[in-house]
Length: 185
Image 1 (cartoon, one colour):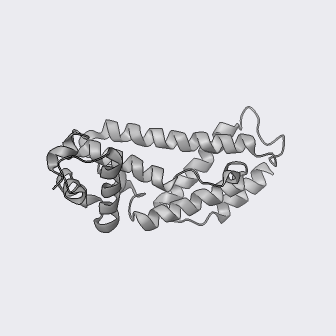
Image 2 (cartoon, one colour):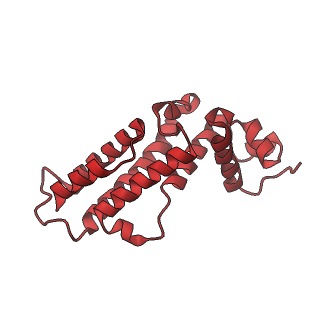
């Protein structure tokens, strides 16, 4: 058995693999140490508690699901971006069944503040990305936004629809794309 894990990335990779194979309940300091082939103490060198490990794993799952695409065109067009987001949500559902449900947010009961902070950072990043796409899409008509209906407010609407789709496990973007078409173009 190794005594030192080479990196946090290796720990998170093994944590994600445990989730894929056995679900969230399988992630513990002991099970991750076993999957990494190291001692329990080695995991504690990186994470002070199970809650901290779980929180970091949640963040790494979100990052895997919504990794930056190689095709930069995704961020130049709102409709392309929405399609990509829904494709990534479907990928996340396939790879991590149950991750997007409310239950998956509730497993961090031991340290809600830290888990909530990580989720808010990730969600803030997604919202900022939506705002950027809305600002860069040259096909949006000039009068689409005003003081009452801003880019940020529409990004909030799109994000809310995305969260709703996650909870319903509905990854068909057709209705959202129609809303985008009728509202912006």
